[in-house]
Image 1 (cartoon, helix red, strand yellow):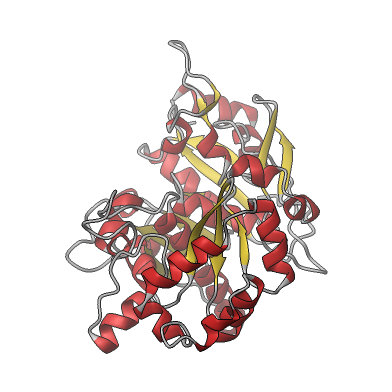
Image 2 (cartoon, rainbow, N blue to C red):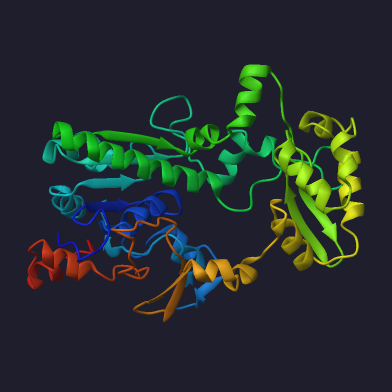
Length: 411
């Protein structure tokens, strides 16, 4: 399997991506951004489920052809797509041949699914003992929930995230809310990548691959941090606090003359700077506000005081004034704002890539900034099966053999 020239630190690493939707594709994209050669194996005729998750669409569906979603474009760059029906023996055999000299295989099918086709870790590790095999599931490969499907929304609820997201009961709009992006999926994808790189380092020492078991449930629970620690060590439930921080104040969203800004003071030093720049140095000696614990106990009072002090200026004015005083503050941007943000532009945070069928696709750049081996952007999110002939040709399949696989509906 050829790996196209890259500048990334993982150049030469061969990855088989048998994932769909978000968590698995995101992990494989990270590896691809860092230089790995990634082959995305998709179901013949249908492809990754995420291609059909719309609107919004990059290509509108029609009665004659399915569309292409904007969602799919976000986690599938730097991959080559091949389309295989691995439910047929010839398709499963083809995948075994692909993995015989691969470094990594990532899959996120329901527990036990691939093993039924001879594509589980045990079978593939016999063919390739150096293979790092990463399974990403909703609830893990063991435990009473291991056979359940697990989507992001469900896991946000079951693993504690929604217990601290939203406004308290009794307030307008009170009740649990999901985080607006698929945070459990994202965390699982990142954790999968970290574990894969750790397993690759272990293989450098031992010569052997291993099985990695990553779940959305574990990943979401591990990210609860102070929320989990508060209960586990103090039997305190932080609960839902809306835009306020459960352990710091003032820390939240504040109304100004033309909208809203965020002010975040996390210690007494920063609060003193805020008090001074707002013209209220007396707050620092007020027994209600002098220490962070005092401010949390008197959250409503300090919030109203800050809100009153902010009247008379716009968002842009206050963001400039507060940051000049070394107080953490900023606007609440939507994506259009981000697209035109001076800092985002200076950081090169958006990447344009030319696709085979969809024209120019824009994605958010990799957040990894490496001075010697930076990420690069070689392959736009592919159309379904775009690289089937190319990849199988690199494996040695002749045109006659490829035609037979097509005739037999294997590829």
